[in-house]
Amino acid sequence: MTYPIAGKTTIPPTELTLELPSAPEAARTARRAIGALRAGLDPEEMGIMRLLVTELVTNSVRHAGLESGAAVGVDIRLESACVRVEVSDAGPGFTPQPRPVDPDLIGGWGFELMDELTSHWGVRRDERSHVWFELDRGPRATA
Image (cartoon, rainbow, N blue to C red; front, top):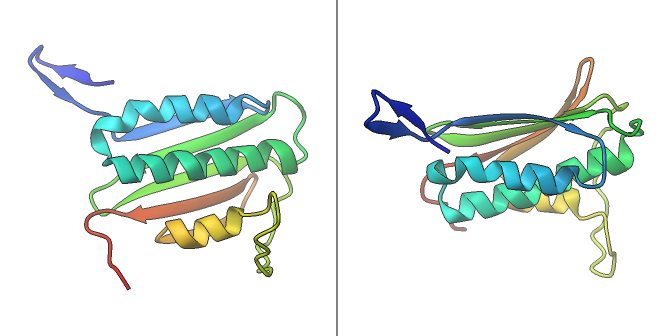
């Protein structure tokens, strides 16, 4: 998705804001909508962002105790230094608690994914619960 300027030049969008109804298809809808930002992302950023948005939206739908159809918000900003994503809902929120990673678990990998794939992430609470993450842009440091 690009926006024409003077009929000749196009600029890809750098922001995306979604209000999704809390429903099983919310994560799929968010993944598809992220495609509008493709021109501003490299393939690795796009893949990580799609995976983590899917995880966070799914968690809002499954664990926030929302009524069916209640809003799950997704806000994405592509900045020069990072990609910033925030998913919010009207649920009670939570405090991240470290837990031992058991490779035999079917679910519960969200914190591990956030720790491994993001530059920074966190949780905050105001009138809504927010989980956010950032992906630093540019060459990735290797350890």
